[in-house]
Length: 311
Image 1 (cartoon, helix red, strand yellow):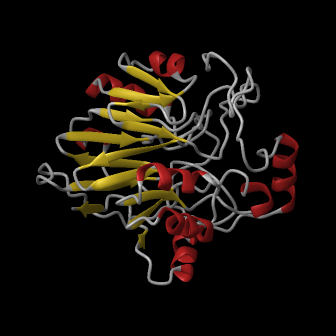
Image 2 (image 1 turned 90 degrees about the vertical axis):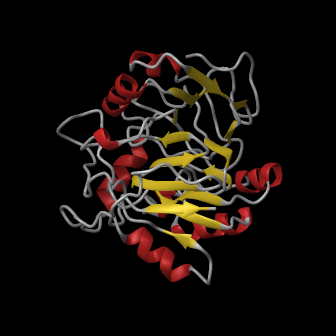
């Protein structure tokens, strides 16, 4: 593992950890979860994608954000195209025949993407770091890629040559790596050997904060203090049930709404929902629950393929 040169408040010399909150649950807790709860049913496949607005570049001063699926967003701003945690595979799993599968198609076909300048990776879970997708993007677009500490060897194997690893609060090309409350693993034997993060960066329309995958925590106030209120916060709202298991690593919709308020975001967009059923709630339950909790806030949950224009 290529980690920091010395221990820090989130690295003990061998593994990364969350400075706040309770540690993520372990393998025995996974068995308990699967033995004691039953997932809500989700429709086999839903064909309700929107038509993305990507045929022409955004106008000066405008930023366009298109939800492709899950935590994959196309962000177009000031002559730069950014792709977050790109996933186009049918399953988000180390196995081709087992594991969470998609219930909605991507909102943009991989072949229809505009030229991608930059890829942001938040951590190494299969629903955020999809090896098959990244190989294709590296071959077709040759973009720069920014990833948290420890992921350089993996993304190099996937065909990327312009790689920057960042620690929390590091910056590259005006992209800031920011804390998250989560964990990392791609097998039973590499838990927390690489870092996890979110990102904050300025666009033509203002600050975009991509929270990626995180539990609720004090890092939202830290982001607000360092960068000011985001023009838009991209906040995860799914994979939250049962709470005794998921609360250490994933926000519920009510917690995401509280994060929106702490950040004082002008508006927020719900991500990490609607495509893969990763927990006990159904794929559309996060959106329905968020709608129940809102009290006049601007917190949208777009459809796959829906484009939101910011100015």
